Image (cartoon, rainbow, N blue to C red; front, side):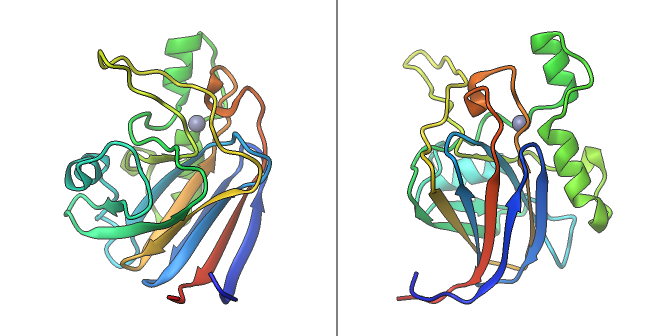
Length: 205
Ligand SMILES: [Zn+2]
């Protein structure tokens, strides 16, 4: 992108969260500052907050489980919300959902853990969106391969320091992400790191 107009540039501390209203045509760039750090991302229609990201519609309409350049995030009303226009990593996930206090207790026997589900609810609270109303999410930089027999697992991310992915808004959206606090599996390579969010005006070449 040549000399884009930067509207916001923010570092998100380990286990922190981010949310912003992004106008149609603007771009959200998420940067993996040190590498191997996952962001759990949701999108919501800023004009009609009842319309939200649908992971199911997104997989079905792209006919593809793994996000890549050109992949569109669709809403529960099958409308385009954001499109991936750049990606230096190439490995992301649509199936893992968000870690929660419930799944951490079920899988790892630990209580009162920081988690993406609570982070997303906190990030969206200023817009009046309740915990139960946070949609399922895309996992940026998360590496969950699917085996030939359909087995599924969480592996360490492939992202390297400085990798980024760009989402262009196709409608006015609220975009929120959790800087994933998961330390009980390989999701973040067992070490929590900062992320960076940049919002810029899209300028086609
Ligand atoms: Zn998480």
